[in-house]
Amino acid sequence: QVQLVESGGGLVQAGASLRLSCAASGRTFSSYVMGWFRQAPGKEREFVAAISRNGGSTDYADSVKGRFTISRDNAKSMVYLEMNSLNAQDTAVYYCAARSRVFVETTERKYDYWGQGTQVTVSS
Image (cartoon, rainbow, N blue to C red; front, side, top):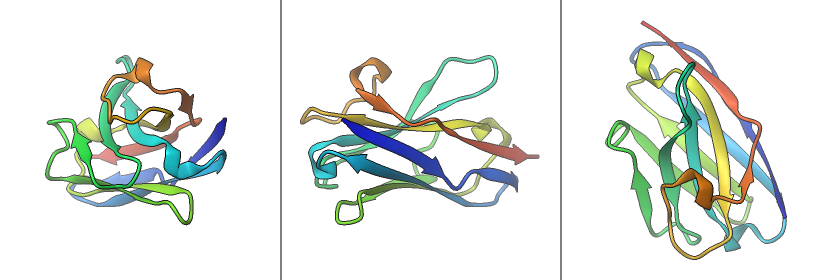
C-alpha cells in the first residue's frame, strides 16, 4: 500500500500560480503511476494530469494543458503539480492518486490509492 498526503492548496487571485505537492509513504514510490484529479463543488471528480513511473511520460486534461505541469521526484517520494495562470474554473479540491500498473491512465477508477485532497480557490 501507499499513503498519500497533499499540500500547497490555498486562496489565490486569478492569474496567480500555485504548486501542489503530494508526499507518498509505504511501498516503493517509483513503482506507481501518479495522477492528479480535482472535484469542483457540485461536479464529479475529473482528471487533471498524470505521470509515468520514471517521469518520462505525462498526460494532461485539455483544460489545463499549457498551464499545469506535473512532475515527480522518486528519490523524495514526491509528486508535484505546478499550476499557472489560474482562473475561477480551477477552483476545486485537488487529489493525488497512485496507480500500481505500468501505463498512465486518465480514468479515476483505474487508480488504487488516494489522498485526502487539498482545496484550491481562485478568486476572480
